[in-house]
Length: 354
Image (cartoon, rainbow, N blue to C red; front, top):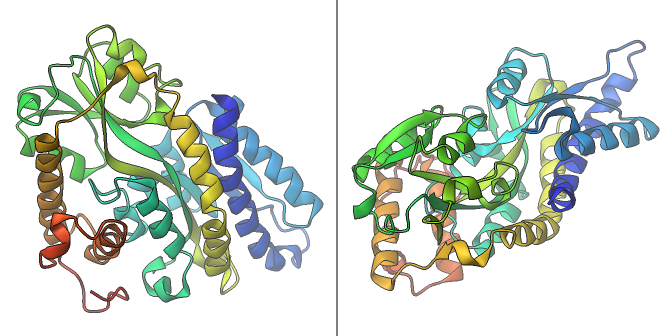
């Protein structure tokens, strides 16, 4: 497991190292300037695979004139806060957490927006295009790249919870900092239970919640098999694609650094997806439950309605939803939504044409 995670994160932290390398031209010219830092969230701490790779790339960077200091956090909220107040010049964190810095890329994790890896590949590669430059910058923040962290599946402690209707009245873990999760859980009549990354798995494992939505990469580190026990399972239906995102403080980097980095990350996308697909296979086949076609249609309908509603409320960025709709219809032009009019709330300045 650790080896596979390291492969996935090798691409991400190589990109982070490149970002700081591009920005270090200015720093290198200032004698005695403090080495730049990047806030890196690793659930397993300084001995985790993410932290290990950060240190490896920091050493490699120093050899080539663009060293940086990884600052590792086991609490994602604290990492984001320290970035916010200027203790770090970059941040590596989940897309849900970084939504506050960029609403466009922060909407790539929208429910049902990307349900297969072909769509993920096309969408995330497009982030490297200069045509999207206008939505990659918001204030002093610029997206330095987006990488897949795997499909988010529904984990249940009872296989009888196999439809939306049967989720009514059940307790579902919801990230407290993600308004969209809370709204969606309430919409099916379930009870959201506030959680964060540090206690997400334990709530499920100790029976405090009946359902969680998590990427496959969390299965072993969070020991989710303890929550599944003998009666539970995993619904074989990705409700979202979790992303990790690199956010740069634009004023700390030379002009053009963000686009160069995004192009590099997009170029590495196939490798990142290969690692994710291997991690998906670590969930034992015996735990998966398949949805009947009728239930799948209900899920697609519910998720589309949710995206439309949340875009009108300003939770999701309509321009990002337009991009992913176009991608989904390229991948499968026979999908029911492709014959329907666009209903997302999209600003006139959106660079993605209908």
